Length: 201
Length: 201
Image (cartoon, rainbow over all chains, first blue to last red; front, top):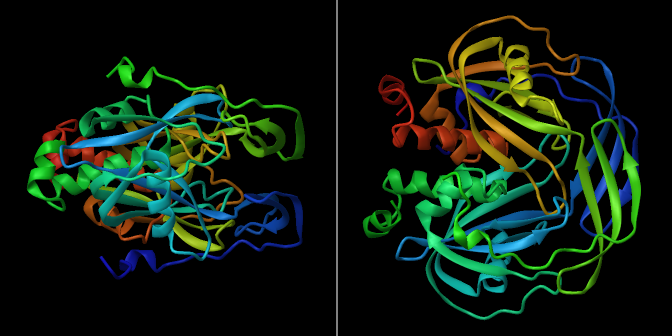
C-alpha cells in the first residue's frame, strides 16, 4: 500500500503551539513547555519531550528459527529487561548504519540481509520520538566494541518462545513486542523463506 | 506461559541512581536528572521522564471484521494522525475503566467483551511509561462526553486495510501498530471466534 487510503485524507484543525519555554535539555532529550490552544479552542499547557535521536530495534533471526535477545538493567524502571538489540540513531543519518552497529555491539552479530519492517512513533501525545524496526537474517558472528555504559547478557531462544514471553508480559519493551509480532505476521503471510518460516513456527 | 522462562533469570548488576534533581513537572509528567553510575562503573548523567498515567489502547473490532479508527492532530509531531482509541489511566486504578471511558468518548462505542492482550513499556531507556492494550468486541453504539481538548474524526475500515496502512507507514502510532499485529496473531492462532477471524482475514 504505497498510497494513503482515502479515509485518511480527511483532517481536522491543528493545535496552536503558542509561546514556548525550554525547561530542560541534555544531549539526549529536550523538554519544552508551550502555552498551547487545543483544536477545540481550549487553552492548554503542553509539555513536549523532544528526542535527539531515532529509536532503532533489530530482530536478529537465525536460520534455525531462533532469535538473539539481550538482557540489561534499565534505569527508568529499575528492573532487569530482556529485549531485542536496540539503540539510537542520529537524526538525519542513515538508521541502517546505526542498526548494524547496535547488532554487532550488543549481540556480536552481523547480517547479510536487512529489511526495514516497522516505522513508528513511540508515545506521540507527549514525545516526538520516532523509530524504525529491522529484521536481520543471514546472521554470522562479528566483534564490536561494547558501549561503555552497557553490560549486556545474551540469550538465544526459539522464536515462538520469545514471542510467548512477550505476550505473557515477561518482555514488555514495546519495540521488542511489536517486532516479534511483525515477524510472526511476515512468516504467516509468506514474506519469509519457507524453510525459515517452518523453523520459526 | 505463566512462568518466566529459565533464560530470563540470569541478571546482571543494576544502575546506581545517585543524586536526583527534579528539573520539570506538570500534571502529566515529571523530569528528573540523576548523577548516575552505569552497571559498567562509568558515571553518567541520566535524565528520566516519569509519566503520571498509564497508556491505554483499545482495538474496537466489529463483528463484520472492520475496526473503528480515530483521527486527530497530534501536538508533538505537528501532524494529523489516524490511530486506535487511546488515552491515559490513573496509576493504581483499574485501567479497564479508563479503556471503557476512552472508547465511548472517542469512538462512541461500548463493548460486551474486553480482553487485555498487550502489556508494554513504550520507551524504556528514557521514560517509565507503561501501558496496556485491549481488544474490544461485541461492540454497540454508546454516547459519551468528548474530552474538551480533543476534536476527533472517525473512520470504520476493514481490519486488513488498517493493518496494511500501519505496515506501510501511514499509521505510525506504536500502540496502534502493535495492537493490530496482535489481533492478526490472535486470528491466526485460533484465539478468536472462527466467524470473526474469517471476516478479518
